[in-house]
Amino acid sequence: MSAVSSSPRPGRPRSATASLKVMAAALDLALEGGIHHATIERVSAVSGVAKSTIYRRWPNASAIVMDAFLDKIGPIIAYDSSLPIETNFRHSVMALVEVFNGPHGRLLQHLLGAAQSDRELGEAFASRWIEPRRQMGREAIVEAVKKGELDPEIDPDLSMDLIYGAVYYRLTVSFSEMDEGFIEAVVDRVLGDYLVGRSV
Amino acid sequence: MSAVSSSPRPGRPRSATASLKVMAAALDLALEGGIHHATIERVSAVSGVAKSTIYRRWPNASAIVMDAFLDKIGPIIAYDSSLPIETNFRHSVMALVEVFNGPHGRLLQHLLGAAQSDRELGEAFASRWIEPRRQMGREAIVEAVKKGELDPEIDPDLSMDLIYGAVYYRLTVSFSEMDEGFIEAVVDRVLGDYLVGRSV
DNA sequence: CAATTGTCGATACGGATCGTTTCGTATCCA
DNA sequence: TGGATACGAAACGATCCGTATCGACAATTG
Image 1: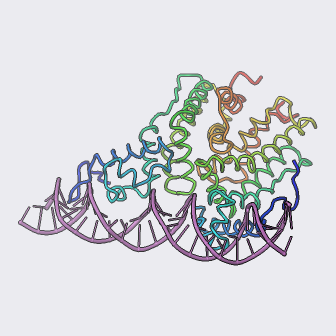
Image 2 (image 1 turned 120 degrees about the vertical axis):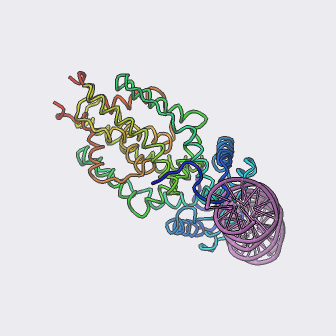
Image 3 (image 1 turned 135 degrees about the vertical axis):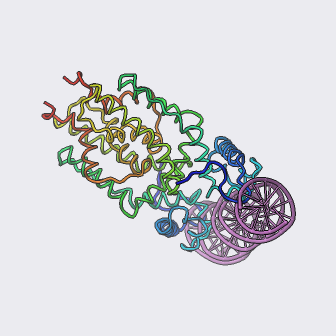
C-alpha cells in the first residue's frame, strides 16, 4: 500500500504530458464527429503520441474518451443542501439535464452506448459518473429527513432509481426531450408525498 | 394506397427466404458472441446469402439484428386488464425484467447501446419496442381510472416514465440486478398513492 | 414469344482500422 | 556504466466496410 509519489521503478518514466495530449485529442475528435470519429489512429495523429504508447495505457479508443470525459465533466456535481430539499433536487437534476442538452450531451449518450457492450467501460461509468451523483442525492435526502423536511419512511435508493431513471430513460431509451416542467413533475411525484406538512 | 399482395413490379422478385435466413443468422451470431460478432461478412457466410443482397435490404449489421430481435421478441407484451391494476403492472414489468435476465437480455442491452449512436436504429427501437409497451401501460391506467381503481389525477405518461425509467436505468445505467422486490417497490411507489380506497 | 427489369450469388476492389511487433533512440535508477 | 523501461516511427496481417461488376435467373410487359 505504499503509493509512492515519484517513480519507484527503474527505466525511463512515462511521459506525463502524453496522457494529457491523448485525452485532449480524443475528446476533441469525439465532440467533433461523434465517438466513432475518435479512433486510435486519429488520436495518435492529432496528439502526436505514437500508437504503441497509447496502447500501453488504454485498451481501446472508447476508454480514452471515457477518461477524458470523466476528468473534464465528472467533477461537476450540483447539490446545495442549504436549499429546501425539493428545490435542491430540481436544481441538481436540471443541471444534469442541461449537460444532456449541451454540447457534451450527445457524447455522454454515445459513451453510455459504448458501455453497453464493454464491461470495463460500464464499470468506469457507473463508479465515476453515476454513483457519485446517487451518493450525493441519498445524502441530501438523509439530511432532509434529519432536518424534518422529509418523512423518515422515504427510501433514498428507490428515490434515486426513480428520479435518475426517468431522466436517463428519456435520454437513452425513449429519446424524448426534457424541459423544466418534466423535471418538476418527476421530483414532485417522487418526493412530494414525503414532504412533511403537505399531504394533509 | 394499393398495397398489392403479390409482386406488382417487373423484374425478378426478391427471395422470400433470403431475409429470413439472414435474420436467423444475425440473431444466432449476436446471441453467441455479442452484437459486434454479427458482421455483414459473417452473416453472409453463415446464411449463404450474398453480401450484395444483404446490403440491398439493410443499411448495416445492427439493423439486421434489431429486425430479427423485434420480429422474435417484440410481439410478447404481457398486459392483462382483468387483473387489479397493481397486479397487472407487477406482472407485466416482471415479464420484461425476465427478458432482461434471460438469454436475450444482453442482446437487448447491446441493441440499445448501438441505438445511442445510430439515429435510425434508435427510432426503430423506440417505435417498435418501447412505444407499444408504453401504449398498453397507459391504456391499462386509463381503464383502471374508468373502473374506479385509480384516482383520475394520475398522469399516465409520467407513470410510464417512472416505472420503465427505473428498470431501464438499472439495466443500462447503473448495471444493477433487479428482483421481484424491487419491481413491487417501484410499482407501489408510482401507483400506490393513487389507488382508490387506500391512502386514507 | 421476346424484351425489359430487377434480383440473385460470386467475386474483387480500395480504404479504414485494428492490435501487434520491431527497431533504434531516449531517460531514469543502481 | 549497465540494466530496465518508455518513447516515436514504421510496418505487419487481419478484419470489415461499402461498392462495383459479372453472368445467370425469374418475373412482368407488349
